[in-house]
Length: 220
Image (cartoon, rainbow, N blue to C red):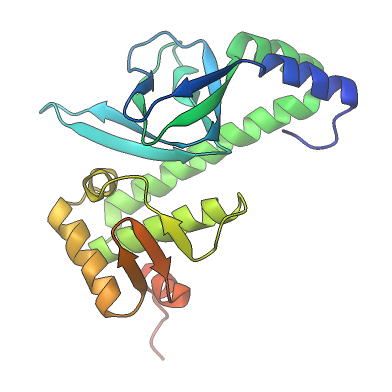
């Protein structure tokens, strides 16, 4: 929620997001081609967005967590352009977009907040394009882990520990890497003492080394 709102404005926004929906693990919140009516604020749980590639496989386009908004893809032409699948049992707040637009015209702080959320998504999209366009496997995985832990930390979680809600295959799909490459790169990070991995539990032992992989220091 945007800060600095009056009690009345907060109550009106609360009114818009009153409806909640539970989404079981493995089921879809919305599908590619479905009519767009609402944005969804994730209260609990984790989602992936994906599109079917030409050979029928799922191409993962992003991962979304509690505290983030999902469904922005539908604004452009009133239809969703991807599937949103719950990676664990989740709960979302349903925000009818016509109500948000109507309220945004009256509450300037809400309008700015919606624009910020949309802008953040654009920046993230650019980051993914850069990731897939020019980075080696080690850089891609290091960037992915740093981004994930930074987003979790912003929501009050640990700066160095995380549970991967997605499979290594899904990570590979998102990063444009084969499953074997993801596994081999994780093993390399473990051998170098950068991370500790126990199944889906990852502990970052050396954040500086991860950052150096992404932005190598120039040689003197």
